[in-house]
Amino acid sequence: MATQAKLDYECSKEEWQARLDLAVCYRIFDLLGWTESIYNHISVAVPGEEGAFLINPFGLLYEEVTASNLVKIDVEGNNIGGSPYMVNKAGFTQHAHFHKHLGERANAICHVHTTATMAVCSHKDGLLPTNFYACNFQDQVGYHDFEGVTVRAEEGDRLIENLGDKSILLLRNHGPVVMDKTIQGMFLKMWALQRACEIQVATLSMGNPHLVPQEVVDVHQRDLSVMQSQGGAGVFDFEAWKRKATRIDDSWQQ
Image (cartoon, rainbow, N blue to C red; front, side, top):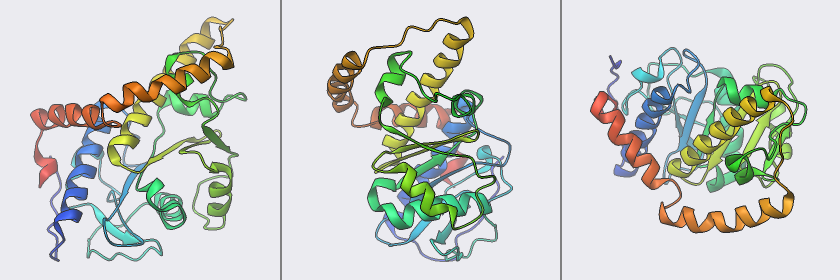
């Protein structure tokens, strides 16, 4: 059952839509098994409010997140929405730095600890071109060495540096950070990355993987844009999973 929290201010239509999108995104992640108890985080920038973003209330399961109980904070860590909830320090440190310095390319961000993605992050070679989905990301992923729990602000600069111009950062021995201009695009990247990692783990367990040659990867990535244009960069995927989440429990809309 969702935990209620009433907004104590009149938010814009754009912010409320962002809240709805983020709340159902948490429910979708929960349905897909991309949760880690009360930990990990997904955030989205508040439209029209520079430096403000929404993130999950620390202490709630993803299945308890609703549009109204999301926490609105600024990149300095101030609770600017009057929420009674606190936020995860590690989540704030990481997401705030990306939202502050990357602009719209990081409008939507997620960080997960799924078994498959953590396993690939812990492999010395990282993500390998062993399968269709992995080819989506070849040479489009940054890596950041593990420095412990991400609670120190000064690590943020190194996160940005190691991300470079990419939209996925694999935190070695830890887990991935995935971002996009839209929450739908972020979701599709995360879904494909999860599948890539699941298949890599299964493939390497058998030994003797057949890696896709770089020239084939290049063709794959070139042609992938044709498929993506059909689905509006994750819009069809996101809407389909939204319908499923709503059929199961529509309290995310509260």
